[in-house]
Length: 453
Image 1 (cartoon, rainbow, N blue to C red):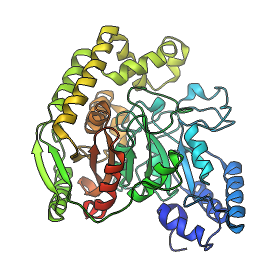
Image 2 (image 1 turned 135 degrees about the vertical axis):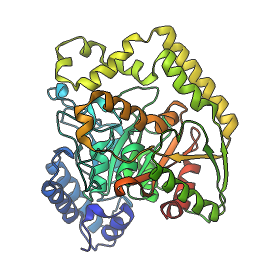
Image 3 (image 1 turned 90 degrees about the vertical axis):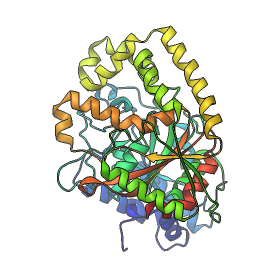
């Protein structure tokens, strides 16, 4: 074995499993051992050893009997601690849910990937209640970005453990959720691929919510092809509808407003280098103002944030009771801002959202939008833990680019495109309008090597 199984792409590992070169039980045992040996104990909140080995043994038997369930049979996957796993409480990165009633069944997506033969190896850490783009968790520890050599750096959130588990080579794929950037941010900061689907593309049954008007799902993995395979199984399909085809010239819009405000020079340099490579490959690049990008922050300043309104409604009772003391004070403070958002404000936000989606769709059409996934590389953890003002300012900037896409119901893929300051990864965010996931995935898969450079 030249590399740990967890450090391989799904496609690489699948080839080994399907040809009989390795056995799913061997793979699962090695992955579990790798997780247990990994020095950062904040990446996973629990391992599912018994379940994983039982699923691996079932996969092994199927393959030996010539009854493979497909390309994902025997592939290990880690689950963000928002997805129901039968027999366990779903703690959502919080201490207050540790004694919650155990889930009676798997979340719909967990069940679909089990039906595809995947092996659930563990649950990954996250920002408490998924309400931060930073990834700091005072209850279960903060997973450290494996690229940080000079100091412990943030993983990004809220799918922090999922990103680190993949970036550190512990698993080939982990599942995340994305309400304001929680898949694309940690993927960008950790140098991996993250795909956020259009909201509603995947079943949300059994997934702990944050803001139902914005919540979406998607995998964190090594390649866009891996994301396509996982997305296929997440929709209960037998074969991908997206294939790598001869490159057709891409039409890409780069926003000239908001997305580059305060961006680190190293991030801009890496992004523009990727754009240069795409232009050489025939991409048509236009730079224009996207009016919605200015209207969304103005709307938030006037009416409040949609995510905050819905998060407050979800947690209102908890915030007024004794459990609030046990929560991350930063999550409490941010969620309580929703108390100031009135019902007329909330309705106005939703009405404006619908209008901006229609106006932006008319402006962009079938073109793709490209910008840095995050305007900065992963900063050190220590200063953010000590300074709440710095934390909130950094959190806002970290979420800014990706959250615009959530508000507009876009789908998006973050692809590594180089390194920025401190030799930390930079993400290239390619987005498309609602329900254009197939076109987005095909474009991202066709041009992934060009973007990476």
